[in-house]
Length: 65
Picture 1 (cartoon, helix red, strand yellow):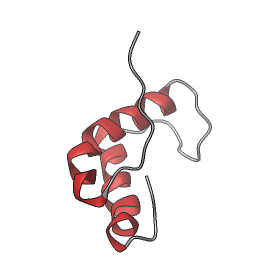
Picture 2 (cartoon, one colour):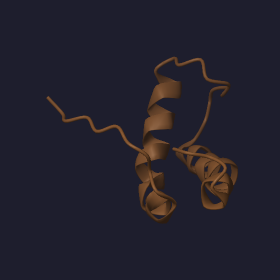
Picture 3 (cartoon, one colour):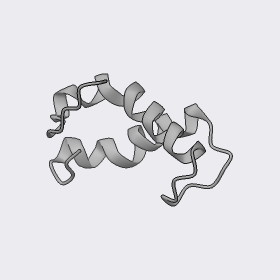
Picture 4 (cartoon, helix red, strand yellow):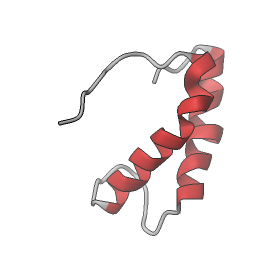
């Protein structure tokens, strides 16, 4: 069993977590999650989502992950 930790991802650690976040998003979408993404989605597109849509708000302090 894996340990699960839930908490706020601080802005200075966000870029180090983009790979894991992208993998999670990609896996969820390909497993059938209905979260406003349309198949097919590539790992690159998943990573771009975190870097271009989410990261700016995290850096500004207007979005929490």
